[in-house]
Image 1: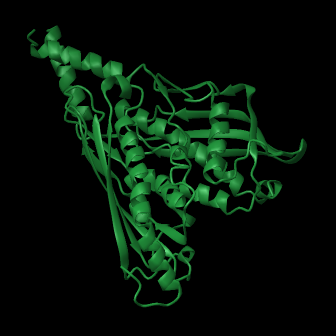
Image 2 (image 1 turned 60 degrees about the vertical axis):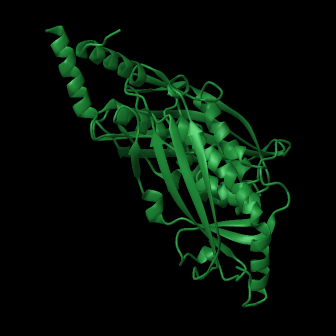
Image 3 (image 1 turned 180 degrees about the horizontal axis):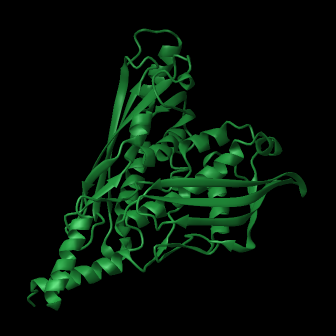
Length: 190
Length: 212
């Protein structure tokens, strides 16, 4: 089969379109920052378990986030509340502070998260959730936390979409970082 | 006319994409590294020193179809390197420069400075994600003053990914390379464990004849 230039061009366009646009993509798996792991290790907290993370009814972006027509889904649990729970679990596990049998439990509710990927020069995103710490069923801590971020973007979707995709775990890192920075949260886990 | 339009569209697309580097990541799954070091850890404090300049360093290397990919190797691998050291040493800390107070004053402390080099490649004419990615990771183990290098450990990891796999994760080959190189580093440091223990013990007792 001989490809003429136009046919080859069409093929390139179709392949690029298939590769870059209109696809269902996943948010990257969560990886905490080294600073966060060290902070959790040195926090003096007792090992804790991660309980249920629910979704506030009608919460923005709880099931999926649209990035220029691409649907970005959570790689765990089918929604972003499960992603948040797994992120917290990962952070505690790497810090040596995860114990599924612990009477200390962190649970939460996703209030909303979204990424605006349509901008040609900058884009932004947010995540907001409430967290509860209980010891043997008694509530020790309850607070709403939020993280916002903006980043350089591009007119080109092939640049802007992966960049927005990569920002989601960064937003979650920042959200969990607000917990570790809260002395009341740390005290509730001691 | 139609074919001419398609050719023009392709040219326009190439011009738009040309000069742009597609962002990918080298982030491993750090939980998969946990437990690989075993129980016999080196009972010495170790500090991973990654500077702010390294964390913000962006590398651009070849992808497929004449395109390029960009990434931040030190930022992406910092957590993995920290977990690796925690798998081999009992006490691990972070520092962002030689003056960082977290290095402390214990003469037995070992300071690790990483050097990362990468290569990427794809034979594809049509898709940009790399199908082969390599990471060379070098750890220089130094004393707290930085004046003396105790030993240097260097390993290389490789990740491969084909279109069917990476179409849902454009960073797949680089993530696999990251996982591979970090797992290899755990074993490579363990092979130097006795020498590091001897040096650290001698340094703590003030023995100037500590082994290299």
